[in-house]
Image (cartoon, rainbow, N blue to C red):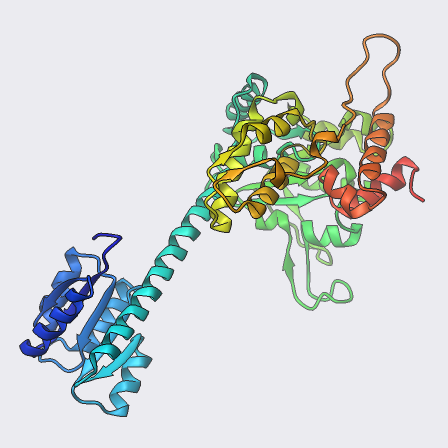
Length: 454
């Protein structure tokens, strides 16, 4: 089937009408396959993909209604136009209810027939393009694509692949936006649990009671508002992987409950006394040193050792600058597909601007830049004017340990980093949270914990 020339199937047992309509449609530039009965029409559909079917309603043997039912079952995107010399209201209603696109009666005006055919083919084109677009978007979003040529990042992936086949607990370290959840998905997809669910939970995003309900589930009537039994995320992840992001932000009481679940391999819903066996692999992540969190009394020592069997550390994007062009083009193709834009290139000047930036928000921030640029671009090349105007003038403090003297503590580094983000956002906490790659509630918790909340 040519994608440029629509292919139409025409079925009519009146040979004169069949010949005349074939001639009209071919003069319009369409490819036409003409069949004199329903049997030969269905046979043609077995070997050829059609963009439109016009069929007589009443025919001996397999009639137009049978043809319509077959199309609705096997090729529902193909519109069907019913043609009949028996123009009754009942037959029209019957055809439309069965899924016909339109209904025209013999004798029909040629202009009317041409208009209905053009309209039906346009519907077919839109449905096909929407289906193809959806498939491309699903393909982009369903694969845990980790794009890299950086040697350090490749070593992380090698280790992740090696431990994926085990049920060993893993902690992934990395700044916000470095792709901790993506790496967790990578491990899941390379494990024997890949057919099971992957469930993610941000440990610092919710109040303690709500977090308990989310993780462990609750029984009907367990608390005010619990109008029905709800399974928790541990149960939802049964046979698969549960990803606990920012695990160091979890309240201490919740840590006790989590430790018990990990030790006993069973969960108890809020308001229940009946334990439920679970088979779930837990992968935790943090943007801070969990050992330091233990020393500061913000994380239980026993939970730390339970989780911290294998550690994987993701480098910041500024430490893998060779990956920036690869990632930039990946995001350009992704967002061009989603937005239906024909952006194909990134100018040399724009790419240099992207490579020179330090990315406090890491890959998530680069993704935001490219998404914004694709939305603004009206030509095939993404250029400097499509990037944030102050991108070239933004400077970011990069924390590196000093060889001489005593290095600053993690708390001091985190405080300075958050204050810098707030300064960049002119004090706007919502914007600062976006820069840091965390939600506003997590930022509020950090400000309070660091003693810089006003």
